[in-house]
Length: 150
Image 1 (spheres, rainbow, N blue to C red):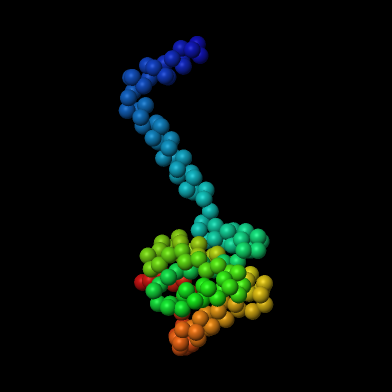
Image 2: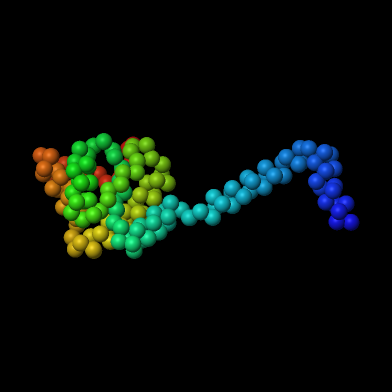
């Protein structure tokens, strides 16, 4: 009996129901992808988790966007790396998705305060100020942090 059912499902059924034989596997793949996408944590949750993991390993990093309005960015990154071994990672420019911005903000909301606790002061503001001073950029000009272009 089991052999007859198996033979029918592998030989006769696909010949008799060609459309259904194609549609069923495609539907299964679509359903599996939807389930996978629903089970993935939100970008902000992933950002927090990744930052917590990095901080626990002693890795400090700030994520940012290169909006083109910060000529002090390379010097700022160099100072952070040399003085505190903090990596500035530019993850995008003006064209980023809301998911990327959510991830970036959540990551920095964990990593930046952790670095400030570790070093005892606002190392980011210090390096930004020193970079701007070195490049003769007036300190009154404020650099935005990871705001998307409008």
